[in-house]
Image (cartoon, rainbow, N blue to C red):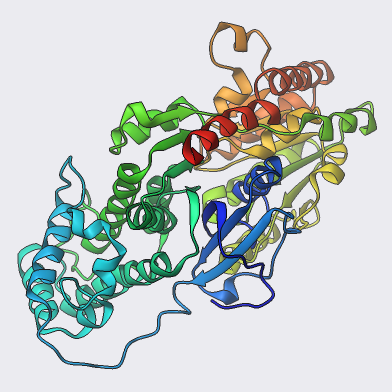
Length: 505
């Protein structure tokens, strides 16, 4: 998308590939991206932002760093320009190659995609490849979709199958067009697999330059959660046809699609960064080569948050804060139900939901309605985004009720400010609270860990800390000790400096 207000140059050192994050979404991975760019002022960065639709984002949320020299923005649905209808037979060689893509899609080969399919030019050229017009209108495309439906689809609706295939694959051609026109970079750095990772793979093969992948959470796992929660994905089987042990064909199709994108990105990446050992093991099981993977935890600027410890009242405030987007994966409803339980024991307690609520307005409305129905609307505050430096002195506990996390920066920032964490047992949260290995565990327990989707357990863990000054003090000190020893910004920068130097050379 052209925007004359965005910075533009002819070439950069590092091109970041960002899906649904910086600079149009605040917090989480976006904060990490901002941190990385500013951490290497000697490098010129560029960024490609990939979103769904422009109306889902409310402007740039960050002051752009001085060394972010190039930024371009693409919305895959808004820019989905349909070429004019041009009936044709379709390139025979190209469609034979495309069939191999679908074969690999169903049964991945350890050697990865066929070489032709790794090139952006395959998706842009009408001769020897399959351009977007051929994919949409060629006779061979229609025949192949019909063949696949007859051979593989277990859903009775051909119409839904046809449009699912169209909608699923259209971004591939859009990403190929981006790869074919992007300014040169010495290294490409994607912070997820998915669409950004596929773009990274195309760029690597198109230019011969290295691709670095930093995976904060397992993209395919998070998309799987989204797919199961999405009602727009059809299941047209009747009650007698449905097997409760099976997911619908179209959900399975979408899951396999994103798994395919992930494997392509793993294959193209020269180096892969995991935040913690659990992610590394999952990446290996999903097809990443172990020798490519390094574990580099997030790190924060401890000095920025350490002074906040002295600004808090002597007794921790009776305020719990959930920091994060108001979306289903954060399971804000479980947090609200836990607040209901806590208020019955501690009437003056408040629960704050601190984060943007525009990504899923329907879910945000349901959360507000839940607080109203539980008669705690006056105890649950939806604050929107708040600067953590202003927030942390006002709260007694940080709470994460998520059903999926990576290594949350907000937990590290809370620790540096002396705020304990109560979290569900997801991602690296147990590692952050309890430590891993004898030396780390000796630093103490920095809060509480509970099962997912258990308001009672979440409320009880919070009550044990917020209602016991000595326990709170011990947890607070353990968090301070852990972040200062193991999760500093300088440690993270040193490891990324080595990765960048290797790639840039």
